[in-house]
Amino acid sequence: MASSNSNLDRRTGALRVDRAIFELRRGRAVEVHDAESTSVFASIERLDPNDLRDCTSTGGTVHLVITPERGRALGLKACEEALIVACRTDTSLHTLLELATGPVSAVELEDEGCNILAADDRASAALALARYAQLIPALVRCRPMMPASGLSRLSVGVVDIKGHAHSRAQELQQISRARVPLAAAEDCELTVYRERFGDAEHVAILIGAPDSASPVPVRMHSACLTGDLLASLRCDCGDQLRGAVDRISQNGGGILLYLAQEGRGIGLANKLRAYALQEQGMNTLQADRHLGFRADERDYAVACAMLKDLGFNRVLLMTNNPDKLAALDACDIEVVGRLPLAAPVNEHNASYLRAKRDHAGHLDAKLDSD
Image 1 (cartoon, rainbow, N blue to C red):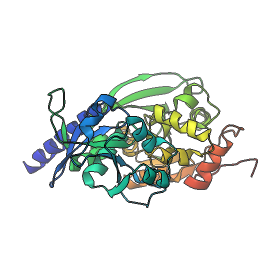
Image 2 (image 1 turned 180 degrees about the vertical axis):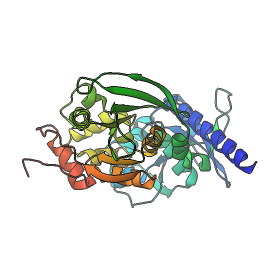
Image 3 (image 1 turned 60 degrees about the vertical axis):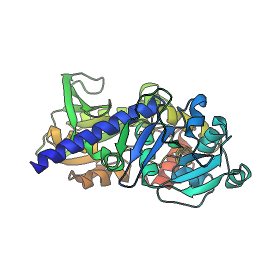
Image 4 (image 1 turned 45 degrees about the horizontal axis):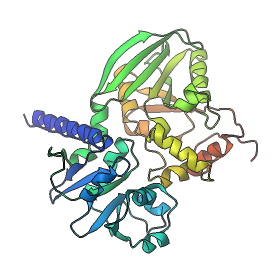
């Protein structure tokens, strides 16, 4: 009975997190609570200027919650979880957005009369919500007052937010499957998986007739609209996708997992924001961190769940990314070997590939200019 209650509590908590993500994306504030207190947060990206006054603290300041990555981009002292930038009550929404994403320094923060405060677990958990929502991870902490609409705010617990990634993988549902012949692999079947909480859909592409009794070639590929569909020259994603399908087909069969994790998990809108920063001289990892994201926001628990559902526990992983090897090892998928996956280098993606090799530890990057 205790186990049944535990599962119900976990599902209820996951549902609250899912609804809180939806609320943030729609520009509505949410409550985040722990055993000590409750705080109210709104996404700086979705905040209505007319509602900013409702987010002014009782002390007459506006509290902007930012990630450690954004803090370091501002030149602030490193922290583990989150920081609060306490600004004057007359600080405009435009200025707050600049503090969240613009080229601001610690000196300019002092000139603006901002103070830096340590954040609590509620603020850190709220930032995780913003990441799940693929919003800029910067929030305004609001006064705990009744919203102007008169509707009660949604409340979610810190413990529920911390367990959300695990819940997403546990509640994965196989939705549909069909044979879809591809140009490089006519004997091919697609299976769609949907996360029970949220609306993300992932696709398992079974090429040929892979035998679960032997290590099966597997490619975990994160969706990239610009590279996969539009053949962008800024990345190697499209070449890796098509190269993986062709190679798996030639080797007699395997699996390609197409994961809904655009832009290393930050989403298409934020990826394009990062592209704009790269035009100003940042590399791909620096740009993500400037926006407040980690170097890689992806979670491969869903990929592990898909492989296990399909009956494959031993794989030959097709990747240049050591983090993917570690992710499968952590969820009891045995990685018997690694298959490198090369892609053409051009003048537009050379710096991108170099950053992945030199700063993210990616393997097998061959750059002619080196």
